[in-house]
Length: 481
Ligand code: SF4
View 1: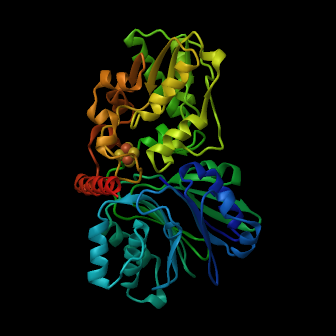
View 2: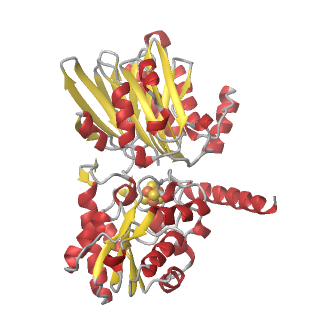
View 3: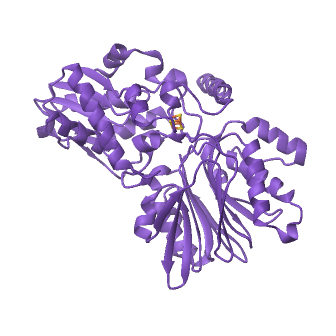
């Protein structure tokens, strides 16, 4: 999960890029970067948060009316500056690119780039392979001096044939324009917006609509699976459905990744969480549990918990306070760091939970260790019983499309049944969202592979096996040395 942004118009775009990236900060906190174009590419990248990477001297230097930006959450590749996006190449034109997602044929693509074009990628970041593939396909165009929009779309079509996986991408092509495209299944979000000022129209592409709101952009649409949109240097928009397949939009965007105020595929994230909260209430009713209060694990579980409480006619209370100056524990790279962050991040409000049967709602249960600590925090604050409610169904399969969840052996629901999970978490009850209810609510067009194991892209399971073996080997080596 990363956040990407791109703007093309008649005025300097760096201010919208920096402000917009801060609104996408929840999608990645490892690194941030911006590239703009005016006669040349102007780039600033750094490790850490947007506000720490960009200073006023960079804003002056990042000139141009077209640009793109990225906030990084590490999935493929190490957390080093060399992997921070955007990436750029100089041939056949200057091309700068950002992406969100993960490709599943990394080794094969790397091999064929070397064998077919003698290109030796320098990083372990899959964006480098997407960028080189795009550049080599563009270089195959008939007449590079008179590059046509059709040539750009043809390069996207060829890329989509070669690159397998999830990749919402934005590319800046020097002296030609700004391109955005999605993988054929449209797994990761990418939206188009526009802002009209006295200087004309500026188009924007973003992973979420939230930054459009306060930057004054009107949301036009989501890019459809396999669709490409190109804004040329005259400000004209060109749209092409390239290589399309069934939409398999990541359901976890609604559960956890996206901000509540974002609208994705015409659905407000907050409203989707309310619907899921109501479904949870039905499961609690069926279980016969009668909590005194419902609390949430801040902050992504608020709408699930408050809607569930309303439906159950049980008071919703704020029972845990979050320290917002500690990063998201899910994003922390090691288990030890994640566990420390939970204690540091969440503090109970004793008077709210003491002496009560508490239903605590979280967005999901991944390894179970974070949930176990939350149960303990609430117990230590005096709760008489703790029911742990997960807004997501049991996660039994790792994500291979850009979310660094865990390997199968680390996912608690992959190896333990409900009673074993309850015991592990030391909860009085554990309730999961029902996968059947989710399928009924979101029929067909959504990826739910981390619950069902039905990966929408061929080759995903083979890729997963390779990744898991590599990780187990690395783990063993770390234990030995
Ligand atoms: S496997 Fe899960 S997290 Fe990954 S894209 Fe599919 S629904 Fe989203």
